[in-house]
Structure formats: C-alpha cells, structure tokens
Length: 162
Ligand SMILES: Nc1ncnc2c1ncn2[C@@H]1O[C@H](COP(=O)(O)OP(=O)(O)OP(=O)(O)O)[C@@H](O)[C@H]1O
Ligand SMILES: [Mg+2]
Image 1 (cartoon, rainbow, N blue to C red):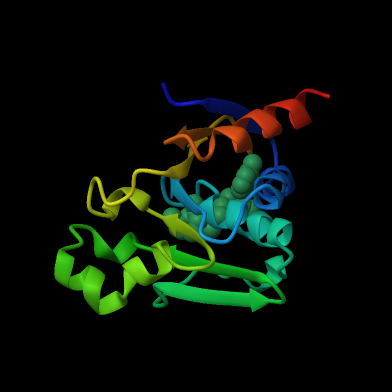
Image 2: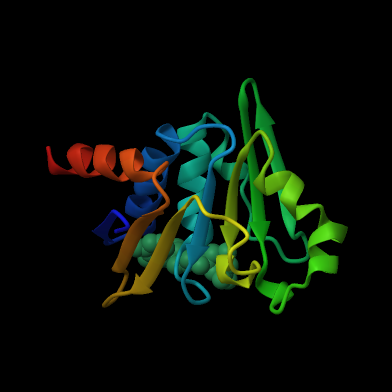
C-alpha cells in the first residue's frame, strides 16, 4: 500500500509553505513528481521545495523553453524539470536530455508533468498531485511510491497535526 497524505491550501503562500516542509525532509537523490493541470501550482510548490532545501525560491521560474534548470548552493542541488512539451517522451529524448543522469544523480529532482516519463522508469518517488478547489483553494495529495518516501509522509503528517 502507498502511504499518502492530502492537504488543502488556500493561497500560493500556503502551497509554498507545504513545499518547504517537504523540501526540509528530502535528501540528495530524492525524486518528486508533480501532477496537476496548467496553473494548478506545481511550480509554486517547487519554489517552496527549493527554500526547504536551502536554495533561493525566487530563482525558480516557470520555464518557457527550459526543460531542465539546475540550482545549486553549498550542499544543496535541485534539478527542476518540466516535461510539458515532451508528451510521448521516447528513449532517445531521454538520452538526449540526459534525464536519467538527473533522476539518478546527486540532487533533488522535481519533475512537472511527471506522467510523461516512461512508465516504470522509477520505483521510488514522492508524487505531488494538485487539484483545483473553489477560488484559490488547492487539494494537494502527496503519495509515497516505494518505501523510501513513507517517512516523509509520516513526518509531514505529524508536523501538520500539531
Ligand atoms: N492555493 C494555491 N496554491 C498554488 N498556487 C495558487 C494557489 N492559489 C492561487 N494560485 C496561483 O495559481 C498559479 C499557479 O501557477 P504555477 O505556475 O505554480 O502552476 P503550474 O502547475 O506550475 O502550471 P504549469 O503547468 O503551467 O507549469 C499562480 O499564479 C498562483 O499565484
Ligand atoms: Mg509549472
């Protein structure tokens, strides 16, 4: 069974704060997949994630033509990957972009439109799924795929309940 946690946010600030709490609990090599329609708040979440990793959230942009942006600061590395224009990604594209080097590399990978990655490429990842609620509300479900991310979900649940 996959461990999961659903949180409702009411503003971009709250979504960033949730991302920050997740980022604080990750490690170099972690993979966070993000799902949600256009404008759901995936990039907003990644800005918070960056802060939680010790990076500058303002550096995180909604990439227009950049598929992969690398962010570094002492001991912290974030690979922000946006696959929006890569639906139907094949093995050749994967190779050309060097995607596996990021996903299996020494940094945190945050991947928007995660489902465009070939199925079964990864066994362990944290999936962040964002749905629209009324007005500025978002319903954000975090799911641990594989055993590694269960601790993150558990700690986050404990953090949010007190
Ligand atoms: N609760 C909320 N959480 C996150 N963003 C919110 C919220 N309420 C309003 N917003 C707004 O929604 C927008 C989210 O944009 P963002 O770029 O993060 O979406 P995205 O999912 O990355 O979209 P895309 O698929 O185009 O990359 C921002 O303009 C943000 O201010
Ligand atoms: Mg985005």
